[in-house]
Image (cartoon, rainbow, N blue to C red; front, top):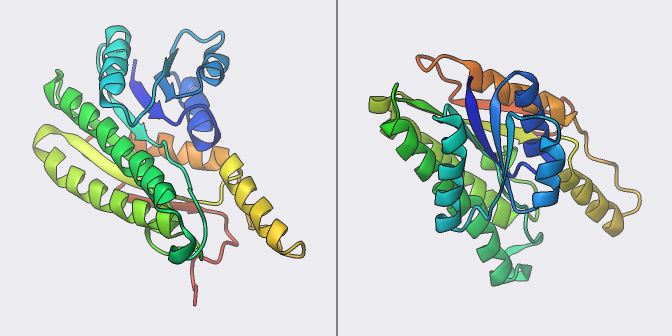
Length: 244
C-alpha cells in the first residue's frame, strides 16, 4: 500500500487531497494543528492517520514522522502543502510580524517537512520517493498587495529546484503544483476582503478544489523514473495569462 503525508490537511486543498488519496487506496498521514478536523476526516477509515502537529516545530515534526512510519513502514510521497496568505497591502503597510509569520509557516515549515521526508526516502529500502510542494500562481506572477505570500512562494520554487537536483542520486523526485483560485476558505476570504473594499467588485473566477487534488494524485502516481516538475492548475478565466 502506498503512503503519503499531507501537511495542512485539516482544510482546503490539503483536506480535499487527503480525501482523494484515501479513495485511491493510499495510507494517508494527516498533519495540521486542528486535531478535531483531522479526526473528522479519518473517521471510519483505518488508512487515515490523524497527526496533530505544528509544522514549524522540528521536534514535533520529527515525532510525527516517526509515529506515521511505525504504521506505514515507509514514505512514498509528501504533499508539502501547509501555508498561509498573511497580511495584504503595499510593503509600507505590512507589519514585520506578519511577514515573519508567513516566512515561518510557508518556508520554514515546508523546509522541515521536506528535510524529514528526504531523509526517510534516502534511508528506506527500496530507496526513493516523491516530494510535491504546493506553490502558487504567485510563485510566477503576483497579485497586488501580496508581497509576503509572493516572496514565500518564490522561495518554494527555489526549494523545489534544489530538491530535484539533490534527490536524483537517491530516486527522490520533487515537483511543484501551482494552484490558482480553488474554491477554498483562503480564496473565499480574499473575495470577502475585495468586496468589503468595493461592494461592486466581481468575484474572482474559481475552480473546484477537487480538480487540484486530483492533479496532486496524478503527480504522486507517476513512476519515479518520471516527474511532473511544475504543474499549473487554475480556473480557466483567471487573468494569469496576459497580465499587464
